[in-house]
Length: 280
Length: 299
Ligand SMILES: Nc1nc2c(ncn2[C@@H]2O[C@H](COP(=O)(O)OP(=O)(O)OP(=O)(O)O)[C@@H](O)[C@H]2O)c(=O)[nH]1
Ligand SMILES: Nc1nc2c(ncn2[C@@H]2O[C@H](COP(=O)(O)OP(=O)(O)OP(=O)(O)O)[C@@H](O)[C@H]2O)c(=O)[nH]1
Ligand SMILES: [K+]
Ligand SMILES: [Mg+2]
Ligand SMILES: [Mg+2]
Image 1: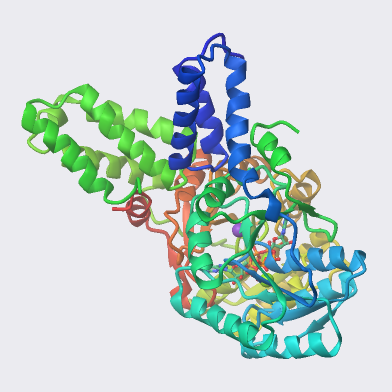
Image 2 (image 1 turned 120 degrees about the vertical axis):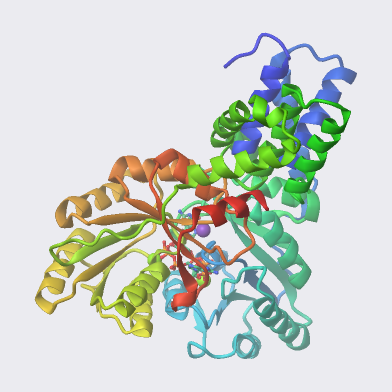
């Protein structure tokens, strides 16, 4: 639709775009209020200018963080811990990152820190093969912190530049599972304090407002350094990361766009915002 | 938070107005704004919310509400009633075939919880005296077959597989034959996760459907799903004609507005909910529309 003038219908349309992109009611209202203010203070009359204003606004929220967007793995050794709720794409993203780093000539090692889910270890091993990197693992049911401990020793022994650790999916509202995560972090702190550390929270773009709660609580347990937004090859827009970026000041580092090893991209806030509006 | 104490907020808003005299249509509109925000915050789809609010408003501006002593409570009652009605009024069960085996097929997006739910259903129906068979039709996800085998082992239910080199349609066909030969009266087909817009893989499901003619095609939906739930449900329903929905991961703290969205756009009943990663009876429940309505509203 093209609008002749700036009126409530236009703002209703913007509201619909933002909310159906999962940006959330509160963030949407805040953004629209800010735009209304601008329209008033800058005496904007052209309805076409509004969408651009809106994009700028979203871009600003995301871009504030863009300096940190690149994966930090220097100086080596580096350790990347990957966490998140069930089924969001942690193990797959690890496979893709391993493939990417391997392609850049890095020596990479994987740790099978999900000892709970059925065949989680086998799944990571398939990814290890695809990426051509070794996987350190124990038996199903063993202590994940012990796996990470061993993987750190192995990373040292083999001079691995990057160790990427898988963890079991866990819902943030399960205290015991979050404590298990803290135990893993204590091992890293104690055994690998010299390593450059990334803690990546994986979020499924299909997820709605619950992702905010996920980000908050995982951040309390683990000092998240970046987000991976997966499954953007579907029709979900993943707009909830806008609210999360605003609140937690954590950058999106990668997006997942498929199930193959190449389907990982660095986050591009411009492309992301355009996609929110259905533009390529 | 928009959501905290919606019930209280509604009551106090309307009660305050009531103190000043009569509650007007405009006051109801204001109250409905709170409900709208709450539903959106709970991830109910934008369009579904719009339709819902209009419906409730129509009933709420009726004289018996506005002139009652407790308009706040009346309106909350209407919201709850309408929401429960939208969620479906009965607890739906599985339709068992008079000619065994009953065939159930689980479909849905990647990571929704299909394989886990397959294990839970197998366990539940085994306890009810059935002889289930799990059929491994996910040939794509790394170690998907192994996962289903472990899941089957945990609940002591056999798993049929032809490895990951055969076509899922053939696997499904052979699986049914195997069930007939071995006296399995309940077959659960685990399929690979796929995007609703992936025509090739949706075509694969259509092929399985036309070959084995499942009695139940159940769409497995993650309860944390946001606005996109309607697209997913619409596509799967259009392409496959689903018989029902299973909502997973309700052991989280999501409001689960996706339940309402999916139900509204497909009209298909939500049959079961998943409540954990384990496969035992505590991790699966029959769906209760009224409980879900209260959960979505945070009341
Ligand atoms: N379409 C699409 N599917 C993805 C993407 N990333 C992962 N998946 C799929 O999502 C499903 C779950 O992925 P996993 O990597 O197993 O997720 P996880 O977070 O490790 O899961 P748990 O360990 O069970 O908590 C699999 O079927 C993956 O192939 C993506 O970017 N796009
Ligand atoms: N907390 C919780 N986790 C669940 C529930 N159902 C499944 N999961 C977890 O969600 C993740 C994905 O479950 P799967 O059963 O592998 O999902 P799927 O739909 O088969 O995934 P794909 O085959 O990759 O499409 C796993 O970590 C499961 O343990 C549930 O009700 N609650
Ligand atoms: K999911
Ligand atoms: Mg995993
Ligand atoms: Mg599966």
